[in-house]
Length: 216
Image (cartoon, rainbow, N blue to C red):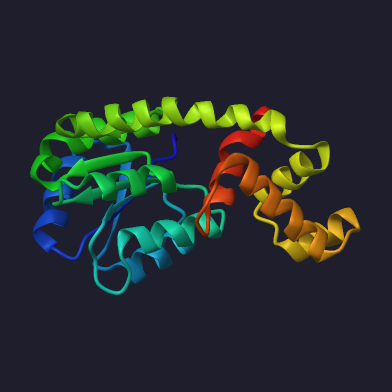
């Protein structure tokens, strides 16, 4: 017997949960579990290991973003779909940066959720069509920022090695131990890399490293 696809619906509004439940339960290949807040959603993701979690962004206990960050940090294998009432580009980009596979406005949830789940199960992304402008601008920005990658030729072999280790989320101390060099040397390398690539901000180097090290 074919194993059912397990999907978690997490939303603090019972009407939303019930609406999603009614739509998704019509598919006999899906098994649905529910959570009424972010904390319970995370616990169910950890214990029940659903294939997909549909998360309201704004929930009590933990927001959808907080749940997603915990899932990512813990390395849990699950695809995430965000639901939101807010047509907000900054929030959309943050969701894309964190690796969300689906992004659906609540006003369109009932009509779009089945299609969204189907797309995500197929290994694709799904964005509410009304947000296509956000996606186009994001792609345009990514294309223009790709020119930033040309600065990679300015890095020394040692700096590229440091960049690879940064992409693995290693601390300066861990990198120093890995390469048998001092923490001060690692910090100098990191500073030089940021200077050469014109990176600034707390997580700019990590974000950049994770995007480009696959090309090194």
